[in-house]
Amino acid sequence: MKSIIESIVEQIPVDKILPNPNQPRKHFEDSAITELAESIKSFGIIQPIQVRKISEEFYELVSGERRLRASKVAGKETIPAIIVEMSDQDSALIAIMENVQREDLTYFEEAESYRQLMEYYNLTQDRIAELLGKSQSFVANKIRLLKLDPSIIETLTENNLTERHARALLRIPDTELQEEVLKQVIKKDMTVKKTEELVEKIRKDVLTNNYDEKLTPEKKARVKSFINAQIYINTIKTAFKAVKESRNTAEYKEIEREDYVEIKIIIPK
Image (cartoon, rainbow, N blue to C red; front, side):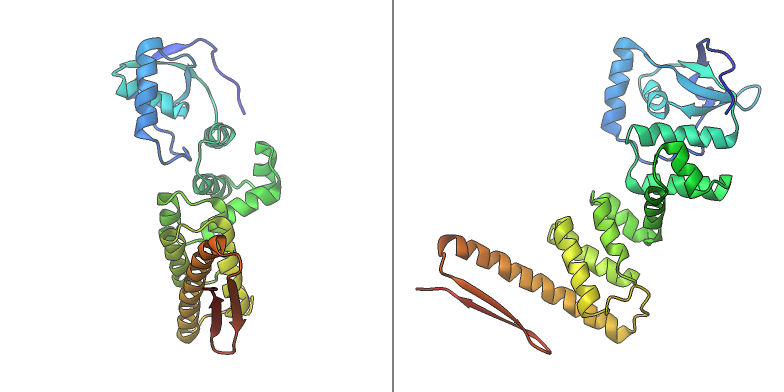
């Protein structure tokens, strides 16, 4: 990676700075940008952004996306910047590392940034891990999240569900069934533990624990029925727990039959 051309800070017009196409962060909170803009109005930019010159007239942002956005909101015409000379690959790496180190990315944005480094810049998982100070398995596990359908990814992100929720869904080999489980997770506000338990029950009792199993329409119907049954059972268990707290002698029995689950609840008068 080449070093900075000059360490002198220059004032560059904000409308001459183009966004970094390799910026991994796709979502910026309006409230956070507004708050930073107010700070900039009061105290100015404390840390200059970094840009690289791409033509006689224009620059491309290397790092400092939030500061640039907030400066525009604050009505600033120029922004303090340091001009650096670097390749597309180096620019992408800096944009990614800046966000990863500050933990500014969602886990899907982080995964997508690693995928881009592999696809567009021919970096291996080992090399990415080395540059970021992570393990190869860490990078591999992030990238694996992108196997989920875009609609699933969008729903997980919109509902602020965790990376472990996403990993649990990956253990179901069918997008339609992943969506079915995800609906229940959101509807019932299921914890990671409850989600993982439901997925494992589906794999063990219906999918024979075979990740690559090809699902027939009949088996999909079975899984959907199984999911609904498990949700009902969990609802009953939750209700019984409330009863148990007031009546310690109440009893709950769950018996697995070949074609159904038998539940007995005994509540003393």
